[in-house]
Length: 159
Image 1 (tube, rainbow, N blue to C red):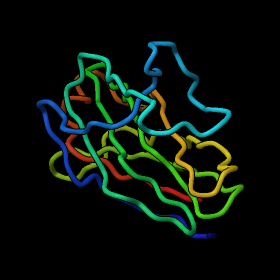
Image 2 (cartoon, rainbow, N blue to C red):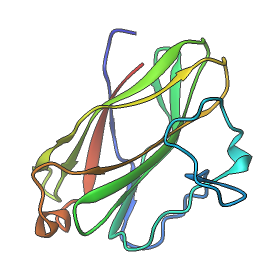
Image 3 (spheres, rainbow, N blue to C red):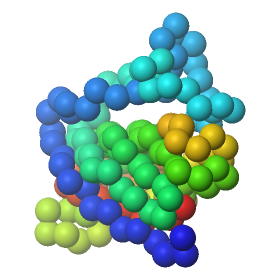
Image 4 (cartoon, helix red, strand yellow):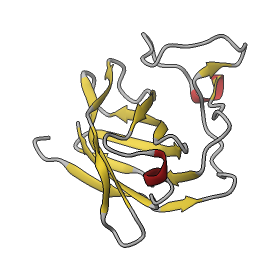
């Protein structure tokens, strides 16, 4: 698909996030890399979110061409770093989910900082399998005092 897809965060909060999805560590507590060599069933992954976050944001299912992103969840930390996690899948092999940018906004919908640059998912070699997209990133141009002003975010996606 040659068109970018834009998606606004649908929920956010300051308390405990209610997302119960997969994670960056395996069930046997061994560390896993950001990109997997082979798809891993969601039930075998646990997403432990590190403590200390100040806000969470989530997105509903996002579709771009043959691809789908689901369970997208972001945690914002006081030092303007974010932890992002989601599952991607495609109905055709060889696709790659591209999160082309992630822009943050304050309560008045003014941009806060600059967009987080592109993060690429895995090459989806197996049709219909889910692939995790997990990363840590700093929000460019945002100090800790600016992080506290963030209330929403918009993702630009492509597949």
